[in-house]
Image (tube, rainbow, N blue to C red; front, side, top):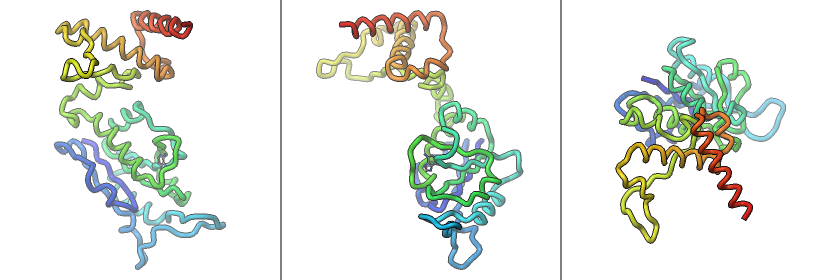
Length: 242
Ligand code: ADE
């Protein structure tokens, strides 16, 4: 069971897509504005020193962290910001093993620096600027939640997929067998599971080599894999030469 506490100025953005399957995960969305103490519920203010945009005030965010944090050490406080460490599948696997994640959605214009004293880690979902951390939080939540055993229904399926062992997924087909002159590869119709698995693995290697060769540097490759890859490389080189 993993609990996610999301601190945001836009709680309505989280109303539907979060499917809390079979209570294996618990998601609570907290409106930072509820932790303000003035009658206007001010959550942001002008930056000291001047400049564009508004900066999120420290007190409401820190009050919210202190309210939702069960005990220090048992929870991880995460700030979503383009300044953070880049999120990837390995990162998601690490987070899926924790029991309590407190996720602060920052506004892109800024957040009072003193909030960082209460943050364990800062995460960016990629090198682009979103207007706030909310969409980033949903990305993180989805990627982490689906790794929790049972959340996908089939406990093995998350492991079978792309990136788990740092290879892209093989091509998939369903009915019909023939469609506008495009046929399903014969081997998939053979019923020979050993051959099918071999074909799929070779396709994964090919896709990864063609599209994301950088991933092969981290992949665990057997001697057989290296042989397959060098065969594909030779094939690609000879095509280039022609
Ligand atoms: N907030 C704005 N842009 C972001 C990004 N790329 N990742 C995480 N949080 C963000």
